[in-house]
Amino acid sequence: MFYRFSLFYFLNKPNFVKNFINYYCLVKTDLNTATFFQSSYFFVNIVFLSTLLLCLTECSDNRTEVPAKNTQGSKVNSFGFFSDSLEQETYAVSKNETLSDILLKLGVSSTEIPRVIDKAEAVLDVRKIVAGNLYHAYTKNDSLNTLVYFVYEKSPRHFIVFDLNDQINVYESEKEVVVRENRKSAVIDQSLYVSLMNADATPELAIKLSQIFAWQIDFYHLQKGDNFKVIYDELYVDDKFFAIGSIKGAYFNHLGKDFFAIPFMQDSIYQYFDEKGNSLRKAFLKAPLEFGRISSRYSKSRFHPVLKTRRPHLGVDYAAPVGTPIRTTGDGVVAEVGYNGGSGKFIKIRHNSVYTTMYLHLSRYAKGIKKGAKVQQGQFIGYVGSTGLSTGPHLDYRFYVNGSPVDPLKVEVPPSHPVKEMLRAKYEVQRDSVMKLLNKVEIIASEKRFDLQ
Image (spheres, rainbow, N blue to C red):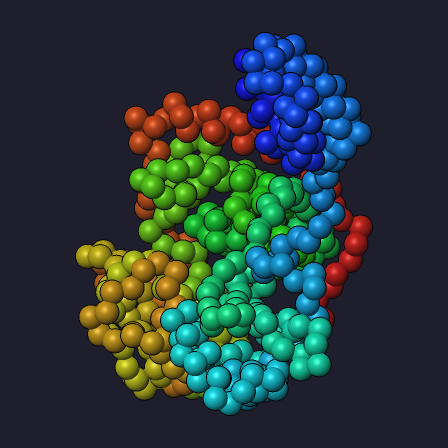
């Protein structure tokens, strides 16, 4: 055993092996074979002890230091590759600039550009490079400034990477999104939009709230003193605000009446319900425009501004700029579309055997809108205009029940499906949690002033 250990150590230490062979030859010269083997046990013991001593000494003096992990080395950038050793420049796409123009400007040869574009077509319509969008060039720090990576930002979140290292590789990816919860409250002074601006919120939050409560609250008729609370997620990319995420709970007090929006998943759809479990989504939206101004109401006798006579006005006029998108207020089928004298360009939608809506004085129709086409609630069907008998751009919105016109602002519409009984207990847990959080949000009138001119 001692002999094997010593031999193993010698074989791994060439200098010791050489010394041992020299020593062995010297001993063998002075001793005969018998004498040598008789003393072999003594010799092996001496060798083992010497070897062990040398091993401990050498291991102590020549220990190999294991370097600590480099915690401050290169890091992957926000586009998913290492760029510390590369030069980086950022530009904006110029008007009418093509991908070929950009690559040529960055030093890619005219013979190589077709190959790059061919690779890109699987993830990017190269004909739709948007002016103003950013792109980034990563080059080697050499005399040629060789382009290694080219990144085109489709949006603040989504981007296309052109990896031009050994082989051309083009792929789409997205930046990491950081979600931060936020809470806002405000007292209405002028409008929801202005109140949110005064509360340092974004216009997108106003749109989200108006969409959630579209069936309960007429946002064209908010009153001074109405108030709201909302808990929601903000999405950040590169530590910059990107978009509003989910509305996690909302409360609105309108004309002294309380409205709650409790998010809950039913039928694999993220929906909003009131505190009793009724869906906030009803069969019809309150208005066919997201924002605008009522310029004329439903009346059985109104003075017509063009004809200069009194006659019934069987709809509600919403004044808005030409081109403002018009949305259908409910699911249905396009029954008629065309031009009709004083109505100008119009669309008539049959929602079921009871309800029908009409949209008059349009400037044009949305793509795909024709007789027989199916439409979904909130879908854009046309654009505000001033065709027919009209003194200015507006939408004349009409509502019919069993073929008879009714005031769109006063019609009672049926609710959508409530929370299912089998999910009621789960929903109530969610409701109680959300309402508890909303109760902790104080309603504070903002001192900041943001006035619309």
